[in-house]
Length: 252
Image (tube, rainbow, N blue to C red; front, side):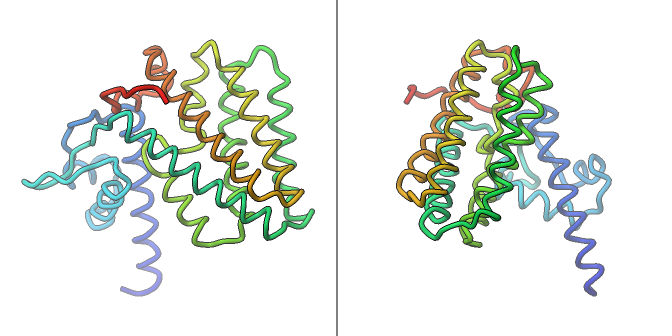
């Protein structure tokens, strides 16, 4: 396979992976439902080899599990699985924030993070917060977390954060849309935005322990959002993937 063909294969794999992941998380495939290579080819319009690789990647992410007789099955998750994934992502983001603070970040490098913070502040001034506002928040919040990871200056940390964020329900914005159906939504967004301000301040003042602690606490807020969403079944309309979670655990 030449270089161009290899690049095309990777592109097709990513395309299939994203399409299948979206199908699962949008409720198009239910937990326990079997998906074969042929079915995935028909669904994604991608050829068999990249589809096979995409299915393996989704199995590595934890969304699918291998069936001994062949093919894959959409996995069901315990609430503990989801909570642990969020906790893992928060631990890694805390490490990234500590590295950024302790190693030092120039004003120029910090500027994009501050600009995103300011845009989030503008959204937070809207009252009431409409569903469209939550949608904009998802985009800006994802950008904030990605920029924060980059400031660590550590390729291994950035890579592991990307992997952790791809775990089911672990994304920093994973439950924002589900929050829009909750009465506590505005309060939680305010707390989360306060966390954003604190971590930027801690990085700027080179306070590593403080930066790490606030990002770990920030992930705990996502844990609370998940638990509230699971107990408010109307959230399923906003995030059908919640149906993949079973067996609630004791609140933490």
